[in-house]
Image (cartoon, rainbow, N blue to C red; front, side, top):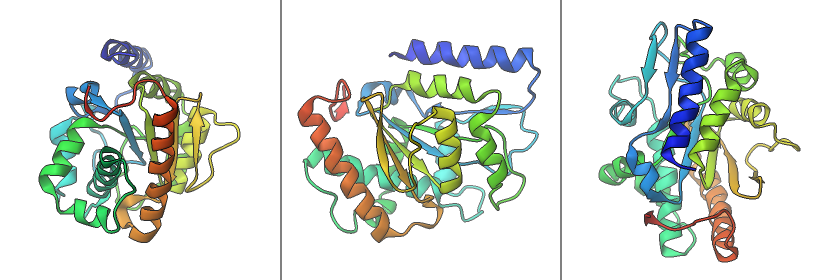
Length: 243
């Protein structure tokens, strides 16, 4: 699929929002056009933002995500930074055709330039397209996002991105993701599965409070499976860096 396919899926979403007079919606997707030039394409999906209630229609672009990466609101948020550190460690291992080095995620958290580069090349979503007014997660709203009237449109956007692998964070979001993607059998927490034999989906703990040992083990297994998929030619075009 191409950028035009994603834009068409986004148009269908916009048409639905207008017809049904949905006043508040946060649009996610590629942080920049670098996404369409980078292989492997990576989709990172977390749960929900907070503090954007009554926001109208907001495009969560690179500058917005960079603000979250750097905790511009001084709320001690770590989700985006830790998510990008995980992706950085995975990409580094794939480029070296090796397993992630111990401590790779912790080291990546301090690599500001590297994290900003990764941020520009991934697609980032929160499964809930509206905001929570408080920092404590709204697990009921997160789970409901997977079967909401607009969940099918969000799924079409994600499919149009044609990612090679997806990181799914948090147990409540996993329930929403299973419902949205109609995974059968459902993906279990901290496990991974192939979707349509082409997209590898990995469940991880929510990265806001990262357990390095646990995530190190998870991404080591993920990288090994991605490397095997590359050798088998699985998942379509698979490369590293700009295509």
